[in-house]
Image (cartoon, rainbow, N blue to C red; front, side):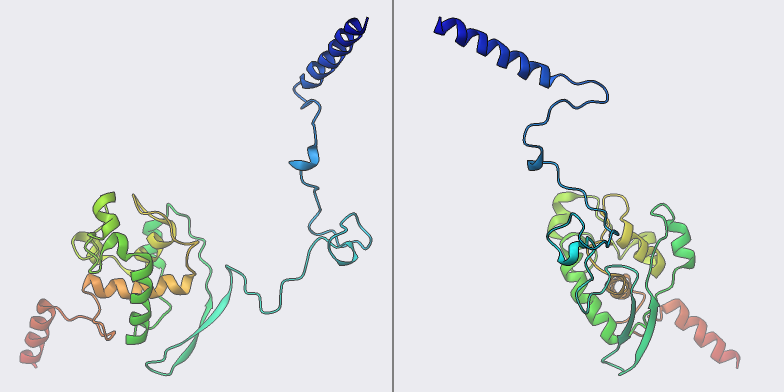
Length: 228
């Protein structure tokens, strides 16, 4: 008799379990312990007193940022150059150019920083931290990771050596080819500092921030002087 009751009870439990596991297109079926994997949804902009949120004061869902909080993006900043003592406003450093718009960035984007010895020195530190492992100390694409990874750009040769600041900034931000985007790893100011240092590796700027005068340009200058 006990065996029959046990079999009947087992059959009922089994049928209930199997039935609860069935689902339709609009029904996920019975969820066991849903609180373990389905979090309570709070409306972020609901600031109603005595709401269902029992964690925050007054039941509010949206907390005020801590004092001194700076947004990760869309921030206004100034830069003080220790080498010149000059401090200037860089404006609202927002960059929303589409990742596929490299040509547009190269044509329209300008470095807001005045390229000085201090800016280049700070850019060099950032380059060594974020870029050197792939591009190498001299920018020739021969970093330790670059040697294994392959296809790393040589910043000192070919058309890349002629790339302007807008081109470089866009590639750092959104990536290109085998290079992954770094826009989430450093802010716009840091990226522009790296751009300034890359110009040194390209041979466009001297380490002190002065433009590099090439032999062809020197010859042209001498010709102009002789004409005078």
